[in-house]
Length: 426
Ligand code: AMP
Ligand code: GLY
Image (cartoon, rainbow, N blue to C red; front, side, top):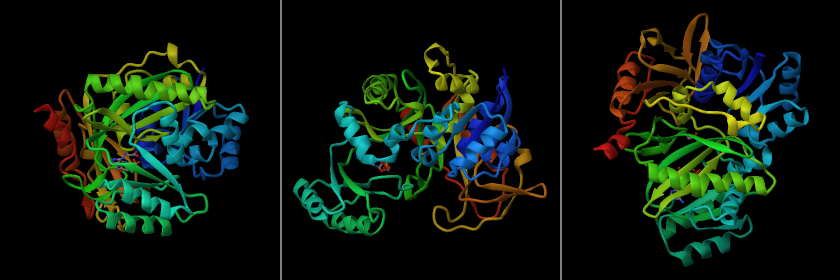
C-alpha cells in the first residue's frame, strides 16, 4: 500500500528528508508545509502555519495523509506529536515530554545525572537566585564558565564568559534578555575542553539505531571565528569520531538515554541528535536535540541505501528492531551558501543563477523562493551544496568546485568546511 506523507518544515534539512522520502516506491504523494522551492520539485508545497495544530490536522484529514514527519524542534516541543497521536495518526518525532531533552536544558541535565550519562558538572538557579548564581560562579573560580538559559533560545541562550567580571556581566545580560520570561531558569556548567562532534540515532521508543556522525561548523568565519549561526557547513563521517569513541557513545550515552526515557514513561521516538565534546576523558554530552541537525542531515541522509520512508514508518509502528538500515561508504561535505551579512542583517530577493550547471553535487534549498520561473534569495542560509567522494578530501573538493558555479549578489561561504577533519587524517 502506498502512503501520502506530510513533512513539516522549510529548511535544508527538510529538503534532504523530502529527497530521501521521495525516492521511496511506497510513497503515494509528498506534501511539505511550508516547504521551499526544492521540496516543491519533489511533491507539493502547502501554505500551512505549522504552529497551528488544528490547521495541520484539518489538512491531514482532507488529504488522506497516512504519515506526518516533523522536521524542526518547535512544533515537537509544542506537542504536535501528542496532538496527532490522540487522533490515532502516525507521526514521526518525539512527544512533548521526550522533546524536553532539547526543550529544557534543566530537564536534560537532571536526566543525565539520574542516568549517569557523562556531561559537564552543573548547577541550576531560578530567576530570583541571581545573587546565589553570582556567589556560585565566584566560589568555583574556574573560567571560562558556561551560562545557559533554560528553554529554546534559538542559539542565543548560551554565554561563555572568560573572567569573573565577564561572567557577572553575562548574568546581567541573560537576566534582561533570554531569562526575562517568567518561567526561565539558569544552568551554570563547567567548561569542557575538546572538539565537538555530533552523533545521530533514529529511535522507535524502545530500540534505536545509530545512523551517522558529523561535524558542524557553527561560526560564521573561517577558523571557527565570529558569531554563531545555524551551521555553515558539515561533513560526515567525522574522523574524530573513531570506532572507540562511537562505541562508548552508543553504550554510555545513547543506550542509557533511550532506556532512561522509556523507564521514566517518555519513550523517545524520532531522530535523536547528540552533541558531544570529545574530551581527554572521553565523549561527554554538550546538548541533545530532538530532531535531525541542519546541515548535518544533508550529509547523512544521501548516504542511506535503505528506503528512508520505510525506516521512518517502522519507528511509528515500533518495528525498528526488525528493520535493516544500510549506508554507502562515501564521505560527504556540505557547504552552506549564505546571504552576505548573515547571521546579522542581510538583504533578500537577490536573483540566484548557475544552479543548472551543477552536475556533481546535490543541492538542497533553504532560504530561497521562486517567482515566475526565477530563483531568489529569501533567507540567511540560502543553499546547501553537497559533494561526495571516496575520501573526505574528494568530497570537500567536489563541494567547492560546484559551489563556484552558483551566483547571487553578496553571496558568502566559508572556505574551510571539513579542514578540521582533514587534520585528523594527516
Ligand atoms: P548548546 O546550546 O548547549 O549546544 O551550546 C552551544 C555551544 O556552546 C555548543 O555547541 C558548544 O560549542 C558550547 N558549549 C556549550 N556547553 C559547553 C560546555 N559545557 N563546555 C564547552 N563548550 C560548551
Ligand atoms: N547544525 C546545528 C543544529 O542543527 O542545531
